[in-house]
Image (cartoon, rainbow, N blue to C red; front, side, top):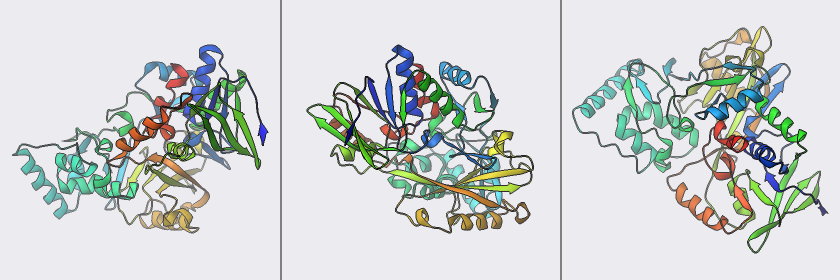
Amino acid sequence: MRKVEGNSAYIILGGGLSGLSYAYGQIRKGGRSAIVIEKENTIGGLMKTLRLNSFLFDLGPHIFRSKDERIMLFVKSLLDNNYFNVSSNPSIFKYGKFFDNVIPVLTFRNIENLPGEIRDKAKRELQSYQTSTKNISCETNFEECIRSQIGETLYWEFFGEYTKKFWGIDPKKLSADLAPKKLVIGSEKSYAHLTTGFEKPTEEIYPTTGGIYRIIQELEKKIRVAQGVIITGAKVKKLEVEGDKIVNVVFEKDQEEVEIPTHDKQVISTIPLTEVAKMLGITTNLKYRGEIFIFIKLKGEKMFDFSWIYFHDSSVIFSRIYEPIYYSVYNAPKGYTSLSIEVPSSVNEVYWNDKNLADKVIEQLLDLRIIRKEQEPSVLAVEKNAYAYPIYTFDYKTQLERIFDELKYIKNLEVIGRTGSFKYLNMWECLKWAVY
């Protein structure tokens, strides 16, 4: 085993947005150097942008937004003010129609667009709610929280079926933390989400060129200029503990084990919390939801004025699509557009290893008339991420508390970030370490 000595004060596990943000923040505050260890051959984590021929694809539809003006200004400066103002404008596709987004406002238009019997049932339920005292129950689970606000029919049509499909488990087993608590029926559509605190975003931006990865690239430049070290293709294998400290981080690179002594250093982990727990002998039932991304090119012009489109029907393989040129005209060459299609799947499920998945997805897109044969759809790549989303089961907080109770005795370990701390964080929250 090869040993690496150094004077870096911080060893950062994971080279995604949180890891790079922390590394830069320490450098900016006082020149405290850091070593970033990333298992993939490229940094970025979920903020990668794939360049496939002349097409650019992010891993999911990323728009940068922030409640914090200081963080927003920091990102604008990173991008040298080369960005587009882009608005979140999602849609839902079901029954062969496009429906409005439903958080925080479920529109009258959506109810009227439902098939007759379903629409009439939903209206009867809403009427009974209006003539009685509605007891909203958001202390139990996701399903109960939504049903207590809008009734059984609208819950299933606009929340239940999709949630079961996306997370792969019964919504009764999901925490109410995932559910909006102030749903209203109204005229004007709006956008909010768990990662916005269920509030409407203000300013939203997207890099002019290079995809969302531009933010990662600019952070990387700043770290390297300050002599920070970023090691890619290095999978963390062991965290060796003596007493109340991690004394060695062992990773594998190029089929060789490398050891970094850490008894006098701080270890910052952004890698999956479940992996850290396993290395430290802590048992947990926490799980992440994986995503399969299928990238296709299409002849023709821009197709949609939606930032992304949800597909609720459980018979449809994919849960969401987005068109990259909605975000930047430079994400596809002239005369072409493209689609990124997301299939929710954990590693032990059938789609994860389905070699024909991309062909099945294209066939369904054609059947739904989302794309046409004359656009000559062609698969450019399939990408998988096993740790895309932390799954908030109804008991996840109890499990987290137990893990953190055990971790607190390790004095030189801190877990941060979306994947590292098992929190559904937005990009701006992962950048706070760079700014504050």
